[in-house]
Every structure is written in C-alpha cells, then in structure tokens.
Length: 207
Image (cartoon, rainbow, N blue to C red; front, side, top):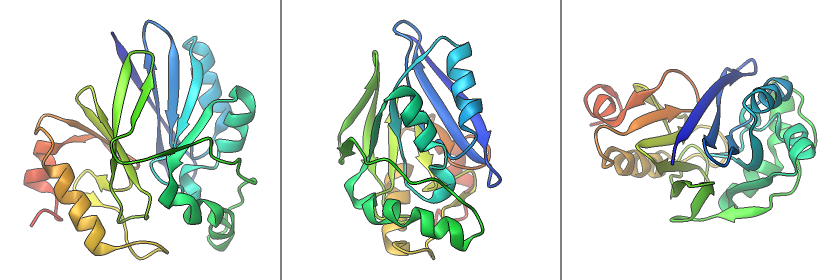
C-alpha cells in the first residue's frame, strides 16, 4: 500500500488543502477544500485520481469555500463531526462578516465520531475529536502523519475567541496530540509542516 499526500495552499487566508490518495486504487480524499476548486480538481485530474471523500477538520469559511464545486463535480461523500453543524450552518454569515462570500453549502453525508475510520483504498486514518478551535474539530491520524486543521500549527495553536471556541478544550486536545509518537509528521491547516517532537520542544502552548 502506497500513500501520496499533496498540498495546495488555497484562498486569501492561505489554507492548506490536502489531497490524500492510495497509489494503487487511485481513490482520493480532499481535506479542507477552502477555496480554488478549479486548482484542486485540476490536481486530481492530472494525477488520475478519483475523489471519493471530502473531509472537514472543521468548518470555518476559509476551510470550506470550495466544497460546493467539489461536491457537484465528484459526488464525493462529505464528512465532518456532528458537533460542527452549528459552525457549518453559520459559515456563510461569518464569511460575510469578514468580507468574504461563499456559496450555499451541501448537506453532510457522514458524521464522523471519535475513533471513526476514514479510508481511501488501503490508506486508513483514525478520527481524533479535538475540540477547542471549534466544537467539532477533528484530526486525522494514520500512516505516520496527523492532519490537524487549526487545532495545531508549527509553533502555535488555533484561536479560541470565535463562536464555539474553548481554551480549556483546546488545552486538552493539544495535550492529547502531544502524546502521539514523536516522529509523527504534523500537517496543519495553515503554515509549514512539523513533527510532534518539534512541537514538544518548540510550541509555546506546551507548558
């Protein structure tokens, strides 16, 4: 089983959108399609991939702007944590508040829970429910990597001052992520990649 992980930085807020695929089956999932749907779909087409799942680590508007176009083009299964629904349903209004415009969002197909498995071909990830930045924030852990959305960045963490944010929940989620194997590669929602070892030593949140 071989896995490929592509990263496209999308939108004005520079969200890291990840395309995870199985080298054998060519099945792929897109994680956090924040914007630039044509660029994401072009990547998928050039790699000869079949988009079967769209997974949201959380649903702030900057992470979901390309959802409608990707869903329409692929009919892929849209998956998120159920605790994210309020954030999801108010994303359009929040976008407008910040001066951005996004289209109406499709209904989710699957609600992920703590311990759920997300698979494309033989590539499998475990869902870690990591609230704090948003109530239904998740991370995807498997194959030596963890896709952290806005829960964990290189040297930092996500903000908690937006609706649904919780500093105490984020602290618990951060502590949980720090318990992963040190060589786990961290793929965050913004900024450069890191490792758990680096965050243990360098992240200001690690007290």
